[in-house]
Image (cartoon, rainbow, N blue to C red):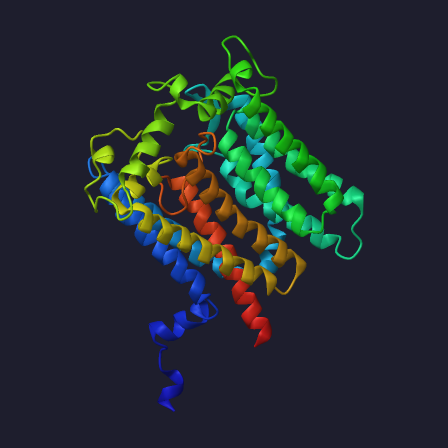
Length: 384
């Protein structure tokens, strides 16, 4: 009889919370986190307490991942409208009362300094997935138009700050949801074709478009300069083109096998700007080379494929749309960061997931993986 009153062990109490966690996804995140810690230790060795702070940020993100994974998708859906509304209200507050740093108004002081645009990286897919779930089976063109407006409002406010990198990420994750919801191809092909024609014209007319005194509509001056610098970094090798040139030198210096851990000269002689944040891939490439790059890309590819598999097997439309869009935001992070460091995309403020230093971005990534774990967990519970 006494066994009935025995106190359950710590493992017995924790087992229900751990049951259903997706092992392959957790393994991919663990490997990428280890690569991030190694790279941060080297690139941030003489950069204050970056490694310690990065480790702390990872622990916080891991805790958030664990907590979010316990929240069922139905409860996540109930958070969609309040979180989206809060994010938009805070973006309006930034436009009115925000803190300005380096010519950009992106932060808000609420006792602690926060960057509200980060909220929309999670709130946007939640909101659009909720919208399409409510209209499952009866989607009309008007529903896609409303979804576009829901996406355009925060993206416009973020662009106004200006913060092109975050705007690209928020817009991308929103477009992923709209695409997965069944946007007709006849509405996809024309804007894509128009964008390709626009890129071709910019490349062909680069000498004229990038001449002194020429100003482009819509874009800010610094955004125009980034595009022109991408097309010809040598036009300002010690100024606007310095980041791209040094990034490509570091990647090339790594060769096939790399210079070895802690042996990167471009990194430790401080030729690579922002070597612990946006350009950390250059530092990683110099020390681990082409083979290390292939391993890192394979890690991201495995994470993305596993996330898409979770999306395919999700039990509801909301869960499928949310899992698919959250997964592809990791693709966008990695593709844009590696592309800008390699000189094939303009330089924008997009970190490399789990590798770059940054507390807010790390928390957002942890939240995203937690959502995928929650959906995977709900699928297993439904099957059982």
